Amino acid sequence: MRASEQPDRTLVIDNIGLLVTNDPELGEGPLGIVRNASIVIAHNTVVAVGPAGAVADECLDAEGACVLPGFVDSHTHLVFAGDRAEEFTARMAGMPYDGGGIRVTTEATRASSSDQLHRLVRQRLREAHQAGTTTIEIKSGYGLNIADEARSLEIASNYTDETTFLGAHLLPAEFVGRPDDYIDLVCGEMLSQAAPHAKWIDAFCETGAFDADQCRTVLEAGRAAGLGLRLHGNQLQTGPGVQLAVECGCASVDHCTHLTDGDIEALAGGNTVATLLPAADFSTKQPYIDARRLIDAGATVAIASNCNPGSSYTTSISFCIAIAVREMGMTIDEAIQAVTVGGAAALQRPDCGRLTVGSAAHAAILDAPSYHHLAYRPGVPLIRQTIGPLQGF
Image (cartoon, rainbow, N blue to C red):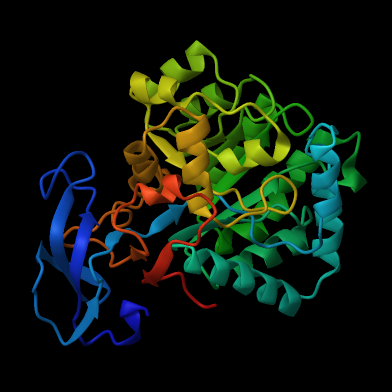
């Protein structure tokens, strides 16, 4: 059920055994836990948080389950066609990941009709929503020409306000040997056609993709066009991505798999969110980042799915939580914050990722008494019901 289906009526989610508000002033600890709680929703907004027994036009009985804010997935690539399952199988057998398969997906995406791409995006959104995601970012990056980048973003904009132009994802085959010419295209006519459908701009700062100077050029062009800044950085090895993102004031730098002490110091001293993508490290057999170093240094951390066909074909934030707790040195409380308020910070969306008066009415009801089960029972579909957007699927 979505609270938006009857916007003029109030809804109470009652008999919540354990409510995660993400407001320490409302409840226990950093997660602001309230026990035996209810929340009242009107006009897609939380209007009251309090003890069980609140009254509204409609009542949804949580039956003692845990309720937490809907997940904020701040990094996805949902507009794509084609299949790369055999590539994954080859990696599991020892083939290294180098990002080159992006061109395979580009060919399939260019060859697909807009109707086909809409259908594929809706399928993935439906899957994500059933898994507790209520706010999602969608990048382009599998068109890599003027028409298909603009088309990808126009499609994505039907389903989210958080759209990101990623023309600088990889050098397309027709520009091999001419990277500067391609960057000129990205920053010129491609950006001009993409910008009306985008909120953000992104680039892949990595050996085999684009270097720091090229990415800086893309980010500066995006800023001049009125777009917010994001960056892929430090996925396959240490490099300049994190430092560049902080220098340019990017909202987030994503992957962050390989970090130096200087990178961590820069993130802790700036406003750029470190968005970790554990399912990508799982799929590519990269080492898992020690998130403890980031958290202890004071950096803001988000976790996202990075749903894409080559390196992280999952929409399950719960899976990412389990990896973060098992492999990345995060407590379950820190992982929950990373997929809610952390993701909201990466998108600069203070209305999301929390359940407090005035916040968006986005919530996930678990089939479990506490959020600990999201790591304790990996692979089990524990989202009983998702309240609120996504939209349009």
